[in-house]
Length: 390
Ligand SMILES: Cc1ncc(COP(=O)(O)O)c(C=O)c1O
Image 1 (cartoon, rainbow, N blue to C red):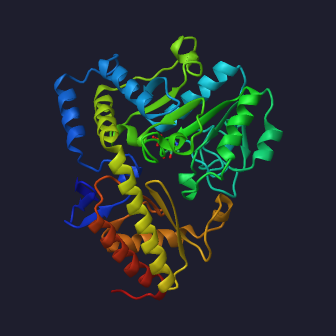
Image 2: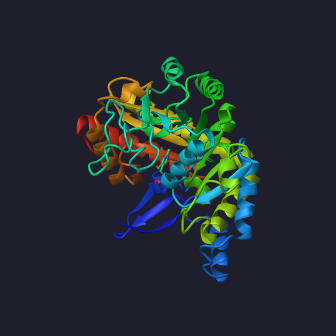
Image 3: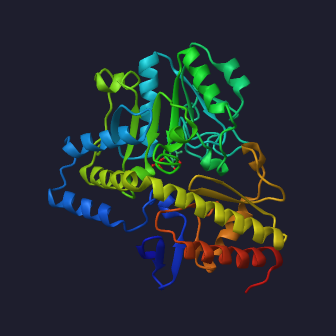
């Protein structure tokens, strides 16, 4: 149980301290205690809770998003990523007067029934019991990277294609060269809106997110996680034309906590800090991820451990697999229990990852943290593979 945190370190109720790579499921790109963010939230608190109204901070945050994210002109704010995905789909349906949506297998777009299907590669089913089996009736599932299937599927019933532009949830896969460009061309030609779900990749794969990194602009972008630096906020952004249904008021966009002033204050402070030092922060974090990945690979090879890693931007995925995991479909049938066991061994050695092996970097991780983490991996992999402890 976590008691308090400082930078990228978390201390539990027994006084044990861990290097944190779970980072609250990703939002804590600036770590747990970013001074400017905490100060901004305290200042906002002093003005009263003010939820439910429009504040100047919202306009400022929309401007900051437009400065960072290449395709952003008009932005609207919500509280969670799940909600923002639903809003993006509604905008696409409103704008195109079409109903069906293409989703890719293994991608995650939140827990609402219509999108909470085919999250695990190898199964097209709803992800949990209790989901409405009819909610995803208008969702067409395709394999990520298969432009031929996409081109055969697109017709005048398809409002949107939604994708994680880099498949972080499925295991930190970059798009194949030309795939995002192909998606862009095919959707434009078909009058279908292209939605990038940048809930993870936004501000994580660079200030401009995945679209900045790969140079492909979607019609609509969904943002969350790092945007709020730990407070709950999400956004849908896009060109003026794409955001017409919201801006014109012809489509309803509801939500009691939309644009909550505390979250907006946090978002403004976060984007200000990232924009001011992007040239230093992103290359440093990516170099650290690359060094960490190399250290884990080297240890796995030396210890003959069946462990492989992928990384993209500031995200790294550990797999327990006899061979490299190069494509999303390579994850079908991988041993999830083994990854859970490895993450438990890492916790015993002072390193917290997400239990499924996903690790996020923050600006607070130091070279010493990376050294300590590589050491923890060496020891954990030894115990995992040979049952030894050191
Ligand atoms: C790519 C992606 N989309 C959407 C979501 C849903 O966001 P939230 O958990 O804030 O509802 C997540 C959450 O992890 C995500 O990774």
